[in-house]
Length: 234
Image (cartoon, rainbow, N blue to C red; front, side):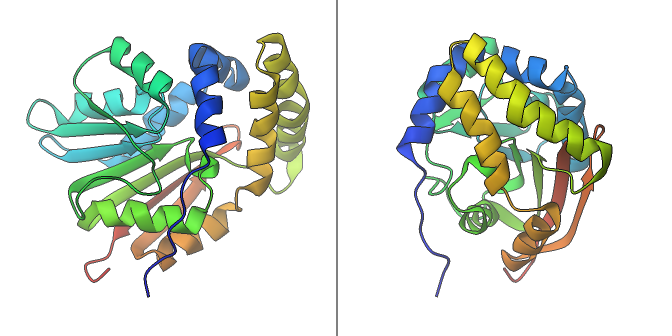
């Protein structure tokens, strides 16, 4: 019996359509610009090589996808997939070198085992079922292919947890109201509450057929990076 089929919430897609014009600016503001460093860490963990095929899921405005395209070069291919048409419109305007595809990350219209690397940055917590999503991401990878998951996560204790609670649960919703997107940036702390702890995400990756799964906190301990390799028999 295969993994259950779950579709993404149309209301979440509509929310991302609404915030597309302010998305990049708000990300920079919310993270004090360190989101660029986090994306560089994700690309380094992907260990991309010229000629590889890469799928960037929940690509948004395409920053991670364009970074991947620069690394795989003209002999490689990068597909940036997102459910939000307005996010993809901004991604297209930002530059070429990536094939953009509007689709549900929970049921991607792509062939099994067709990519060497799959990345997903700040997108897994927005999908309705983390376990089902990881199975769908695994479906995209050839045996031995790599998955890289970059995501904001709640620190378990210490100064980082205090900062996280204050910033994402109090300040970020206020910034969203000032940007005219109160509902969307009230959604952010709620999505973070629902997102599983990093060790649980790692266990779910293993259950989805990934091997050599590792994870670590990134600078500021407000984001995590998970890496795994699709097993030959999965």
